[in-house]
Image 1 (cartoon, helix red, strand yellow):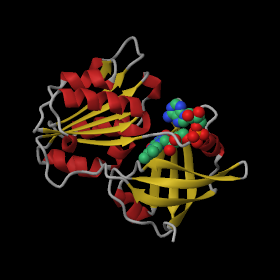
Image 2: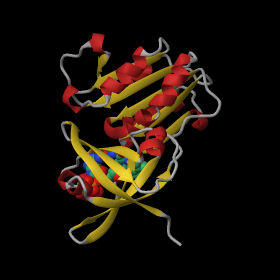
Image 3: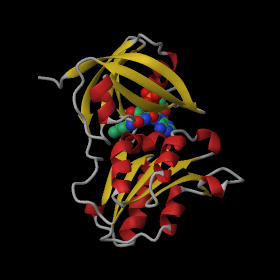
Image 4: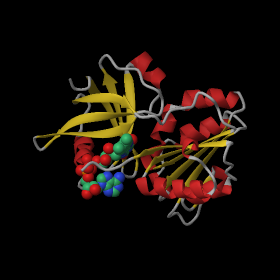
Length: 244
Ligand SMILES: Cc1cc2nc3c(=O)[nH]c(=O)nc-3n(C[C@H](O)[C@H](O)[C@H](O)COP(=O)(O)OP(=O)(O)OC[C@H]3O[C@@H](n4cnc5c(N)ncnc54)[C@H](O)[C@@H]3O)c2cc1C
């Protein structure tokens, strides 16, 4: 027997940033999920049935109360899903399966929670916003590092800035690898997320690190973390590998 599938209808398709779409779906009889998980969406491309995975970018509470789920898609040149979703119109229907994945919040909280995401890799952290706000109120130290090439590639930053403003123990940084002039007062940094990760004095045994997005960034960060003495249980990761 195959995995259960759920019907979903596109209710909004908007541009979040250069090359990034934000899609909102209404899901019929939705499953429950934990913030940080992903779904697989089935779609048709030139008569071929295909599926691609996407992190859920909205909270479980929103799905439960409104039946609504959001995803962010980074458009890829000549990508099949990229083409399908770029042309998708409100009212189009799809099917999804899931939820899948273990990039969820821990039961025991470490001294610091560090969330690293490149591009749409911040989507799972956006789904965690209500829980992170609550943790911040309890004084939990949280760092969110978003990596992008330039300012025009950023999105969801208002949500993360607002979260950071809700608690003295929450910090948000946008790390821009190809931007000449960064605005440090708006928490922008120059360079890759890996560099910023080095600057925040990581401590094995105290920090739990989440990595999500570009597989090369993840491999690079894992190498850096292992060299610093982190064990595999202190690193949670979700690689956005391409379909073959
Ligand atoms: C667990 C998981 C979660 C994911 N979550 C998200 C998410 O939240 N948002 C999101 O945008 N994507 C996410 N992805 C990636 C997503 O599933 C697709 O791979 C992506 O949307 C590209 O699909 P496509 O059909 O448009 O491109 P394809 O038709 O699969 O690929 C077209 C061409 O582009 C190349 N390519 C594909 N992806 C990339 C890339 N990222 N960078 C450079 N070249 C590429 C391929 O090698 C191929 O040559 C996730 C992947 C996994 C495994």
